[in-house]
Amino acid sequence: MNHPDAVIIGAGPNGLAAAIKLAEHGLAVQVLEAAETPGGGCRTAELTLPGFQHDICSAIHPLGYGSPYFRTLPLEKYGLEWIQPTSALAHPFDDGPPALLEQSIEATAATLGKDGAAYKRLMEPLVPDWETLCQTLREPLRLAKYPFGLARFGLKAILSSQVLTETTFQGGRARGFFAGMAAHSMLPLEQSPSGAFGMALGIAGHAVGWPFPRGGSQKITDALVAHLKTLGGEVITGVTVRSLDDLPPSRLVIGDITPRQLVQIAGDKLPAGYRNRLGKYRYGMGAFKLDWALSGPIPWKSPEVARAGTVHLGGTRAELSASERAAWNGEICDRPYVLLAQQSLFDSSRAPAGQHTAWGYCHVPHGSTVDMTSRIEAQIERFAPGFRDLILARHTISPAAMERYNANYIGGDINGGIQDWPQLFTRPVARWTPWSTPVPGLFLCSASTPPGGGVHGMGGYYAALAALSQR
Image (tube, rainbow, N blue to C red; front, side, top):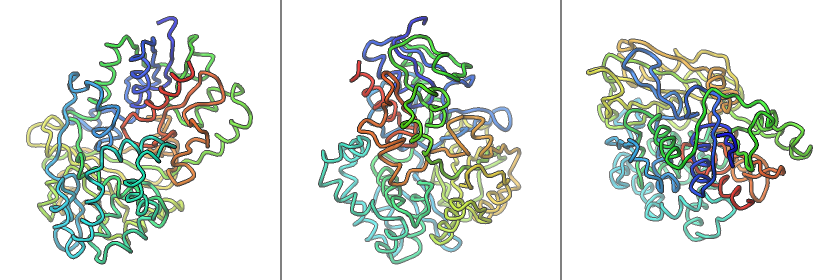
């Protein structure tokens, strides 16, 4: 494609979503990707042993399955098949059975002991309105379209997880369970809006589940690329863009990149004031990730944990809070909060017959060089004695390796920047249309734009709409 109408820098989910939206409007679109395969944080590979398929970054996709834009695309036509595990989430404790996030609020409440009724009061008013709430929360600066539901959500969402759980629940089971969901925010649990992340993920579990693609996250990417090609779009891999001058002439350029790369690539073409504001954009804690090839399923002390695709390890709210506070403050926690996925229990394509995979990571200080392998495996062993005996091979990805794998993961930050109030709806800087830049025809669409991290494509969708409005 010698003369594209639009060039997309980066073939992650947001870049591909932007490309598809532009192509739907008849534009000739070219996507340039530095890696040898498209996907960004949505790739799958044999990281350990032949026959063991591991998701390199993203693994579980409630926001992808529930994405208002992805749901308009015929991705199943290109082989994308979603798997719903029996339970979305298990949160084991040192004593007693685990708390489980089930599609049914009633069934979830039954695992929370004396706080079951309080959990139902928190979630029941919001789950029926999931579709509208989800759409509205993905439309920054348009929140007034759904005032009553947002009021119900917002009165709790503005709280920190610490305050929300303290004022809503009386016992440790519900507090620990909710804290595990809130910790996906990569914020200290004492900080707002960590509570909003816990509520949103809980609501998603009841409304759409926490599914994952059969065969791996790469299947999402493959389906997006296949659909783009039917619209005439083009994806070229192995191309590193170091300057806007490297690009073919086009009317539009959309970068699935973070503010740091935008400054590097656009340079003096950006007004000095805007460039300085981008330079103040803040990146958060990193991720240290492990993948395992296992000779059998994880031997959980509580058999109910095997019902879930996702497992949160850390036990009590106090322990989870200490882990996230330490990472935020640049410290290492000996008992980290571990996010684990066990897709092969529900997807036999992930490993050879009778064998299994596991995927897990913990939050660490930005750019940390500390090897967390023994600490993460100790947390799994704590709730599943004998886990280490099953390990056939392991693969580690440090924060530095995360950034080498995907330049958007600055310091290992997989969310494209801190998602606190100053950077939630105004990322990367405060602008009425945050996906646009002061340079005509230049836009940003990564997780560093609203609505932030996650495989949902909405940043790309809104950037494309912004670009189309300026044609």
